[in-house]
Length: 405
Image 1: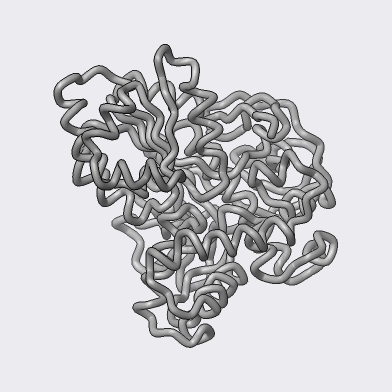
Image 2: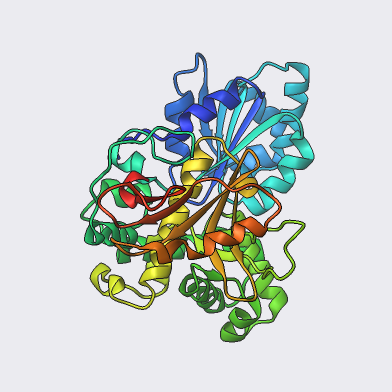
């Protein structure tokens, strides 16, 4: 598979200069191993070992001291979640030698992994996550209009058809480099691997069909407010089980929850988060869409387009080392007034509306006025849409083509 340069490389190198241990997490098949090997493979003396090999995994689990003697730092350890027994011994080594950039760890099962990491390596690790490929990575183009302090790049000249082709295929590296691979074949295998390797062991699920129905119900609700009781009812499970299963999807990087904006002066805000699948190709597969043209004409087109845009923004900010949890929120009150996204930068709120339209008008920014009632100053607002060009909608708000993401 040809290597495509990832934006996160810069942040990974930064972390390696300031922490003895760097941990890269993310969903399966997002390219963690490839990224780490291409970023740190040229470090003098660095070695690579993967715990996918049963013999090495057993050694790491039963005799972590011997394992680390056999594989001294600097060392890349792939799939570290299979041997959390290594972490206390890595701690001993980095406490003896506090040089930065000693260990580079990757892991997919973040639910268990992060508990062990936080217990063993607190204060010694730099942690970041990798998602699927961004539009700019795929096109090998200059930086996006977002984050907000970036210069405006050249547009990619997307049409509604090309956008929904990208939504349908998703952002997994293999889907990008192998144009002949069908989404149905790839994501069918992906779901089976995910169930077999991660979920069954993690949750001791006896009925795989119930969990598959659960993630399919979640996928069908992407871009909507989270209602776990409705999902649990549709699947036939209790709400506690649904909450536990959803937490696995979130910590595994499959699902992203966008929190509602909260400020001291808001009195009637809806408190449920909005749910987004981080890979639209997987969401399409699970919600049974097998044709991008049919999806574009469907009632789900708007929510899938919104999911795609939110996912791109999460990837753009995260890959630049920026915390989306402190920056991203949405607004909706009991009067039905909603803003798709609010980006907070340096105490200033930037409202963002997402429209599957090429010519959104002033109606698109009608709810931006509610920002005046919030306990924070507001800045420039944006409407991200299918317009072919960027232009001002009024003195404070701009049309941003999706081609600038």
